[in-house]
Length: 428
Image (cartoon, rainbow, N blue to C red; front, side):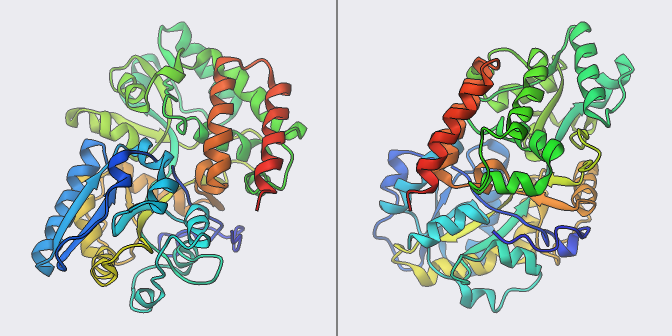
């Protein structure tokens, strides 16, 4: 996990010149029986784009590739959360030729296991990717395995009309954020829309609380297994979160992120911590212009709002694929500005990573997202991308859901996390 240039501001052209690490998580019988024979001009793709908007957008991209190459693309779409939770079994079973995944740490994890095909030869011909993006596509062996496709920052989303109606102001500090949540609660709103049924959405809130309270370097060190979860600084993060819990939607462990986003769209909730694509996918087209966001508020002035969470998604080639040539041809196409532009015209909820991709079609939220990332001093990926996948899925999903159910027993919770962390991070 490289940590270079974390003190420099980040322009779009030098996107992710600071530390970034990748991950995600998935399952399913269909995934485990995905690959097989097939004509030589066909390539199979394992897709986690199960939501309607990205699924249709990728469909357009793959159709364009079929037309351009005269090759057949067969897409195996699996529920996003299921795909993430079962990725390990998928790759060790009969995976598709090419599959969607995440940059950085989690990509490196599977590369180390010999489950990914090296594509360093393709990278020699790639154009429009920054050195930092290349770094996030590189395994610990110095070879490239990943084709980045888009990124999206996390922030606090809200409806402008709701803020205008009640006279709310965008909070800059955590005290202002908590005071606003309390005011929304009195106004009859669920102050913070919240759904963690899938296990990963609440990780974004923890990440921001930790980076704002303890700084980016501590956060990355904690995710890397180098800090103790019983450290007072970690307990402080959970304590800050506990103070906000009364203003979160109740029953979060039984609510999907889609349902949480819908409550924001329906003006039943005042705010929500999401990635750029999430609320937009659940808002009616007519209401999209009413959606806005602000950076997660400052907790400690020493760290301000310097760090931004901005995961990178893209594509990998399975080592087990019998169609390496066909898979690489598809990856070459997906690395072009044209391929990104086709996607973003149908899904205006992400940001292109290729410098050559046109930004003329960007909406107000996309433009604001680019500015937020450009102004960041450090960039994180996401908890389940900045740490070991087994630690994220086996320990932290359960731990955070346990905290949501019982936020008062922080000592026992952090002690349990630390005990499991020691076992996992010393297992290699």
